[in-house]
Structures are given as C-alpha cells and as structure tokens.
Length: 475
Image (cartoon, rainbow, N blue to C red; front, side, top):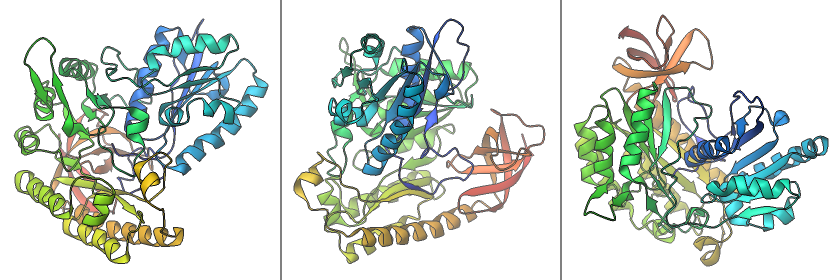
C-alpha cells in the first residue's frame, strides 16, 4: 500500500491531496452524540474510518465536521514515518486545549500509530482516552463505554481473520462518484524499512462475493468508480472453507468489472513480485478496468533492493515494466514509490534509481527520504548512516527527474481525446470541472452543462506536469 503522509506527491493538481488529514462530514444528529474523525495516511486508513463511522452510527453516534461540536474525537493515524507521528502529536496538543473547555470530551487514537505504541500512548499523551488498533474497530463502542466511566480503554489485538466484510462503510467526504473498497487486510511482505506488517498484522483476503456486493451497491447508489484496496492487492487469494472455490486477484477484477460497463475499476497497490500476466490480460480485456498500475520500485539498485528485502532485483522489476507495456501498451499509466538515502546507499546506487526512472518514465511518483522506524528489520540490522543533507539532495534530484518525466508523459496526451469521469468542480475555478482519465490523470475543462458522475470525451489542448487541460468534444 502506498503510504502517503510526508511524501512528495507528483499527482494531478486538482485531485484531492491526501497528505492533509481528512475529516468526517456533518449529518443530522438529533438526540445523538456526535463523532468527529480525522484520518491521516494511506487510502486504507480513510477506508477504515468509513468502517468506524458505520460501527459508531449503529452505537448511536452521528458524524460531525467540527471537532468543537464533537462528544467523541478519533484520530486515525499513520506510523510510516516519524514526521507523520509528530503531526498527530501536534494535533493532540490542540485537542488538549479543547478538552479543558469541554472536560466530558473523549479522544481516541486509532490505526497504525495506536497499534505501534499501544498502552505507551496513554502514558505519553494524557489527553488520549481510547486506543484501538486496526483490527479492534468492532470493539470501539465498548471501549467508549469504558472511557465514559472514567477508565482508559485499550484494544490493540491483531486478528488473523478480521476483514470487516459484513460492515457497510459510511462514505465520508464522498464526492458521490468514487469510492474505496477494501479487499484485504495486513501484509506478509517484510520489507525491512516498513512498519506495516507490525501494525496491521498478517495478510488475509475478504470474501469476493461481499466485495462484489459492496461494489454493486455503490453503482446502484450512483457511484461510477471503485478502487480496490489492499497492502498488496496482487497477493489477494480467497478460498471457501466448504468448497474448492479459489478466487485470485485476476478473478476478482473480472467479477467487479462485470457489474456494469459504466463502473470504472481501479486498484492499489501492486507488488512487483506478485503482479501476474493474468491480471494484465484481465485489464486488457475490459475497457472499464483502468489502465493504470502503481508499481513501487523503492530503489533502482539491486543491492539496495536486497537490503530492503523487496524480493526482486532491478532486472526483475524492468521485466515487469516491459511486460506491462507489451500487454497494455505504452499509454498505460505507471507510478512508483522511490526512497532516497536508504542505509548504506552509495552515490552510484542513487544514480541507478535515476536511471531506472529514465527507463520507465513514470507518470507520477511518491518520493521521500528514508526515515528509520522503530521495530522494523532495517532499524534492527542496519545503521541509518546517510546524512540528512545527502538524503535531501538525492530526493531533490529524484523529484526534478520525475517532473521532467511527468511533463513528457502528459505531453503525449495533447491532441488526443480522453474519456473522463467527472468528479466535481475544479478547485481553482467554479467555472471548470475536473475528472480523471483512464491513466489516473486529472483533466480540467470548462463546466458547460455537464454534471458530476457523467462521462465526457475531452480533447486535450495543453498540459502541465500534473494536469491535462482541454474541452469537451462529445458526450
């Protein structure tokens, strides 16, 4: 899963950026207590907040968009980098002042930071009343009752079975057009730099029939795009306990695509070692499966990749890129994650990351300097020995290279007609609409009489490194 806070993101400028926290929306709350949720981090965290909102609605809470109006505040946290955790700690300082004004207010910490620090969090942050890990969300109403009685409440148990398959998420901050659908939880990949296996537990896949049912319900409610989420979607595999039925990710993609031709299907995130030809051929078979793959490289050097425990080397990764281009064509959008300054990385190895970028020409990237996380394999085995100024300088070189490639990849679309799903009004002007094309690129065009949720054909007339600009030529 691509983990987003503290990353440098070269993405479509009009796409809602997720390096800032997202909050819950206002809903009628007559006679109900009010819940405010603030979500940080990866897309999975935002999807989890929608599950929490559903659990708490059944417990008699309504959501509010104002922390000041809330009876209960949850921060759904990220632990991917130290700076991500520091952002949450700064936020808690503000909530401490709010709690002084409203002593009955309860504050809870959810997600990966809660799982990593566990009861230590209660000692370090006195304002926190509730700590719940990613697999404990069903238990939150009971934890709230404990906290209301004056006790500190904690559940950080990691499950081998929990998928929340039977819970219908409440769509928070929804544009009514696009939605996340979680297909699996946890991660069995022990990348040495990553804390996720320790905060989200072992990998387990969700019943495919529940996934299809959720996606179909979304389509019937007017949604026109779903993104299938998992830490590593390509390793999705579900087997019924009472039959020999086995569903792979390629099977699942097809099942969701068959719901309706007007339901677009995206997915995130792929792992280079697991993405298969079956997945690529399924993508090629269905027009409504978007031709875009997020395929994190992390480094372009084989020795560094081995230290990262990525289980592939540079030639393997390049062979996957070649296969994507062969089956899906040169226009298939590809993005990546890239880390600068991993332990012992030499200048020559850094240059190999730049040369990999030159080979692939990514459409966009999530790029960041290495940040050691306590408890990871890298923290235990390797010295974080690259000076911060060197990390930052290498990161800036990676960013500059990606800007060149993003501009070049976007320029390819100028003069082409793109099918765009309208997601809403452009953030820069009420007179323009925006939506994404098949390759996940944001397209901005004059508003006209078009509406959110419609598909339109847009002739691209110009571009920036982040956005395509054009005009509607037909519906």
